[in-house]
Image (cartoon, rainbow, N blue to C red; front, side):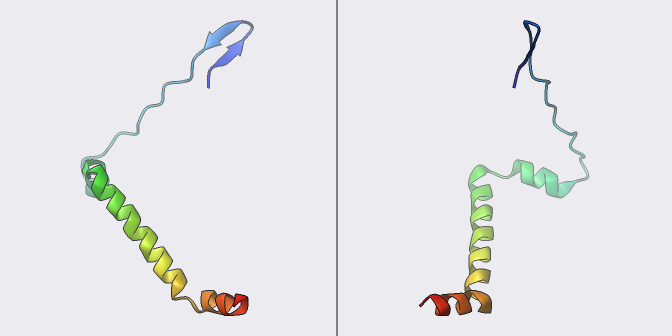
Length: 67
C-alpha cells in the first residue's frame, strides 16, 4: 500500500523472491508442476482431511447427539 508523507508519494517496496537453490528438488518440482496438477494435489489433501474427519469417533458421536 503506498504511503504518503507530507504530500510526497512513496511506492510500496519492491518484493523479491527468495533465491531458489538448485539442489532443492522438491521446491523445483513444485514450481514446475502444471496448475491442473497443483489443483489435483490440493483436492487430494482436502479429500484426505474429510475422510479423516468422517472416520473419527468424535465426529460420529457429535452426529449421533445431533440426530
